[in-house]
Amino acid sequence: MRIMRNLLTVIAAMALSASAHAVNCDGDSLVKVTVTNPAGARKAVPVVLAVRGNYASAEVKLNGVAIPCQLDDLNDDGIYDELAFLTDMDKKEKQEFSVTFYKDNCVKQAENRTYGYLGIRDRSEKNQKHQRITSVTFPKDTNPYNYIFPHGAVMENDMVGFRVYADHRQSLDYYGHRNYKMDIAETAFYTTQEQRDKGYGEDVLYTGSTYGCGALHGWDGKKSVMFENVRNRTQTVVTEGPVRTILDITNKAWQPYEGCKPVDIRTRYILYYGHRDVEVQVKFSRPVADIPLSTGIVDIVEGSTEFSDKAGLRGDWGRACAGNNPKVYDTITVGLGIYVPKQYYKADSHFTDGKEHLPNQAYVQVVGTDTDNMHYWFTCTCDIETFGFKDKDAWFKYLKEWKKEMEKPVCIK
Image (cartoon, rainbow, N blue to C red; front, side, top):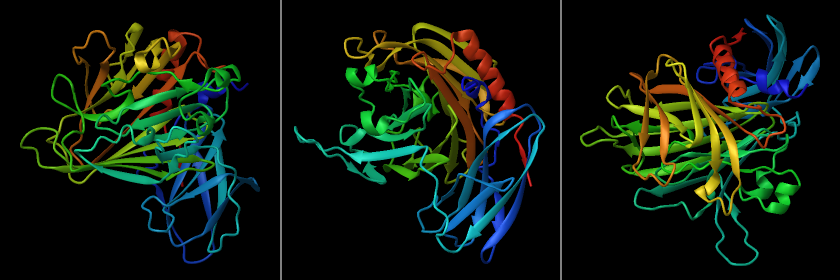
């Protein structure tokens, strides 16, 4: 049943993308890849291989049958860096894949099942034609919020959608789906009533001056520290395809507090097909033991119920209204969740900006790292989904299962 997809859709390769398995090849090359599942059945397991060599295409087969795969150029140098594919696995199952790399572009890529978008707003009153771009950089004294369409870079699969606001907040806004269907290319996050009636999704969350669902900020002990004090900010749509879409958000020379040695920070968001969760990989230009960090989820306020295991997993469930404007947006039940691995998790906290008439408050995960990198995940649901969760108990149960699955990644040889 398709509803089981929610219970089994998890990221199983916990650190795989950050330290992908290397493949060294000189010509057209066949590689055997064995994936072993140490736990229960799971769906859409990401398998990511780091590729060393200049290849134009690749083919992945399981039991002699080709499955969708995706070659990605992560640094825009014209050479593919990683190969990604997805697989469903039964309990304790072992699968063997044949992966063939070709110098020629002889393998047609499968249809895109993820979507990434960034645009420059056309401000004409009639026949607006927003220009699609792949990357944009703004100096710190510029507010690009009203010039980027739709206010920031977008990523989507057929279960969830997100945009990362282009201003200093860089909060993540959540777009809920009614059915298994990508539709942000048509709605641009601004769904009409006619589209709602036809089963399209819509913006379901008010992020305000918070993390939204899962942004990374600094931390001053009481509230989050955003990205006002930077040299510049860059948003990039790195890739989209049949397997995943990737967004990079880069802040140059960030100084979260006075006297802090400047640091560059790249936050990478990876959304796989078949997942309602997003993997977040953070890379700093130096070790950042001196910088308190935080992430979290917006405290939805209206009927909000919180869950935390006090060990890196946190969630909430409540009624949200996008734009904080019930005259324009419906009030929708939303569930959010975030998981930070134990090596980065420090403590739970909570903050509010003091504006009591707005839901500008958040459930906080205080985090940090002694190295130049860290990673974590966030996830979400809403009650307009025809494939979602019926109540907070079901959602919190899912979050616990989600964490357990991530703590038992598949083994790749």
